[in-house]
Every structure is written in C-alpha cells, then in structure tokens.
Length: 173
Image (cartoon, rainbow, N blue to C red):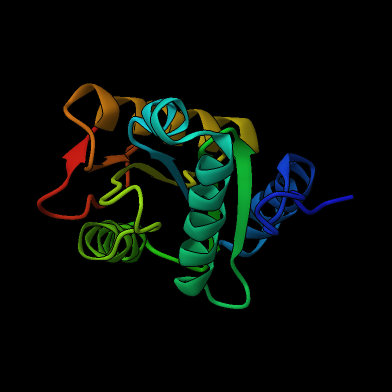
C-alpha cells in the first residue's frame, strides 16, 4: 500500500508519512533534513513519440537510478507522474546538491532507454529551516524545481532560507 506499482519506489502515501516523521525528528533533535524533488524534462514528448509502454520503462529506470544514489536511511518516492522525491535525513544542502549533480550528469552520460536516447531531469532542493513544517519544505523544493524548469531545464535550483548556507555554483530561490 506504500509502494508505487509501476516503479517499485515509495508512493505519495509513504512519502507523506515519512516526511512528517522526519520533519518532527529533525526539529526535535536539531538534525539536517533535505528534500530533493526531480522531474524528467519533456517526458510528455517521450510518451507521445514512443508510446506509454516505453515511457513507463523510462520511469522505472529513472526510479532505479535514484535508488542507486540513496543511503538506507533515505527514501525515494514517486510524487506524481514523472516527478520523484528523495527524502534525505542528516544531509546538508551542499551534499544534497552534490548528489543531484551526480544524478544529473549520469543521465547525460547514460540513456535510460536505448530507443529514447538522452533524457534529462530538473531538480529542486530545500533544506528544512527552523520551525518549518513538512508542507513548507515540500513547497520550497517544488518552487525550486519550477525555477529549474523555467530557467531552461537540466539544472538544479536550491531554496535557501535565513541561516542556511547555499551550495556554491547553483541557482537559488
């Protein structure tokens, strides 16, 4: 009931429950928590050009790629359509950005499905701020992802609040 049947990663229900628990734990113990939101660029074109069966294969391969870049304490979940979230407890903004960059570069080097060719993704990352709630963290990561899309796709944007150090060489909102 908490696994996305297509991709085998967590579903929205599992994400919501884990996010609430991790935010509470992070606030209580003053631990770092980052949320990385990613979306495959121009995914609709893949479905339109190659069909939904191949589009589904691309989604499965992307989910597997995201899991490769996770620790046991992390969670990968399908948020909606071609949008995925990585919940990263104990991770700084700088380390979350570095992880997103490794995933982004891997996508550029290695096609998810040979028939489709190169696929790119955009990323939005936020680190939990003092007194923030789970909805705040999700909203900021989503806004950062939207900015990555708006500014040309295949990029990373971080959302930074007062008291947080931004990762260098990455867009901020």
